[in-house]
Amino acid sequence: MSAAAKLTALRDRSTRILRALRRYGGMNIHSARQEREPTEWPERLAWGLTQQVVGARLLLAHRDLLRAALVPPFWLALFCLLVALARVRSGPLAMIRTFYLTFASLAPLPSLVFARHYARLSALAHRRFGFGECAPRIERLRISIRRVLHGFIMVSIAPVVVAAPFAILLVALSEARPAAGFLYAVVTALWALHWIIVDALDNAQVLAPGETLAQTEAKGRSLPEPWFVRALRRIQTRRRRQRNRGFAGFLERYSRFWREEIDLIERHPTVAIGFGVATAALLATPVLNLFFRPMTIAAAVHLSGVVEEGAEAVGRSEPRAGSPASV
Image 1 (tube, rainbow, N blue to C red):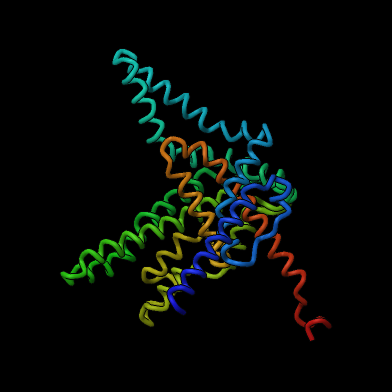
Image 2 (image 1 turned 120 degrees about the vertical axis):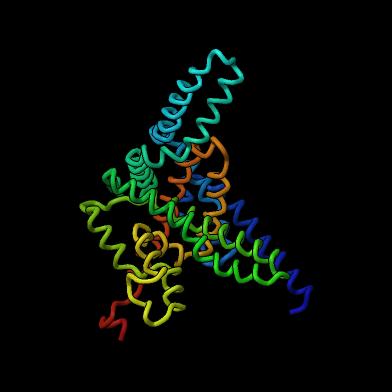
């Protein structure tokens, strides 16, 4: 393909993405609910990017959802205000600085402290979108703490161990040292983006009527191992391919909580990339990220619900093995 043809193709794809962004971004809640997941990748990318807009519109359209979204920031702000009042003798500027520093440093804490509150918010958003009745996925505190610890290990420790050997190899080659730093930064950034998507989709999980936590865990265990575990198992020696040996076993163990979310990302990578970029941009905003988190949860609920409904529709349209239509 010539350079002119490549440029034309790139311009055409960019135009399709922009048109799709305007279309999906301008939809109201009812229209977005009726919309199905696109089939072409430019539209799929744009659809994933605009899910945050859908989440924001749902919160603004329902006062009960909006009030629920403001509960964690309110209590955190009240606590930070009390901390700032302790420095009242230092002057107004010191109080303001203390307030915002405390607020920013404690912003990740509500994901654990308000885990049950966010679970109820997710279930309420699920019903408001019209995906049917459901119950919030409320876990015991020790399970929530384990999730936080396992998530920290997967985001912070796993990429260091995985990417370090390749970085060390490139550093050993004097001419490749700049490339080593760049490669390591790219790998860790993509890994972090992957887990931002996983965390957002995890907050959107709900229980179907009559479903239990044990059943959801069994469903997750029945899914294939995550892509990174399978990749590591392929490159390990034959002796280390046993389930609980080697670094692949380590990653498999600490990623068990998120089998369903990782499976969704594997099946819909383009949508997940668009959703992840928009989510990362919102959650990376200091202080305001706590206000954006409920919007991200609502967006993840909509994305998961539409994708699951699409999968169920495909399953219903495909003839079962042994049926007359499949012969």
